[in-house]
Image (cartoon, rainbow, N blue to C red; front, side):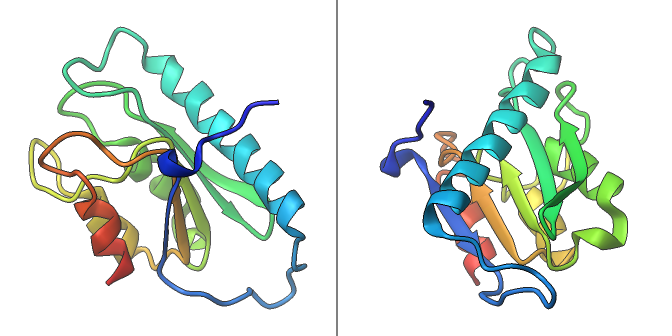
Length: 148
């Protein structure tokens, strides 16, 4: 079974509330679901293999009420990031949803605006990131912004 080490997991919550009409999952169910969604992020990211340099491979999945409502991956440098494509696909369903992404959302302006701001604007409830971005321009600041 695939596991993600505790030090590689980063979770930022914008709201700690159960959505009306949803079932409270047991910890083991949550962990397995989180792993499945992270695996899906990695599958999506691999679609851009060899096309993103110097950027990393990133995939994102948005889940609301236990169902995937948006997915995306970063197709190449200078193009929107995975979270933006997933938010576009989810539309209004992103509000109150959980976003999974295999790499911490960016928090700086480069060729594209910060994904952290797009997630805040979309009013997502929670972001589950597979790892903190080692890029010194990000390095935890994306998750810190989401916690504000």
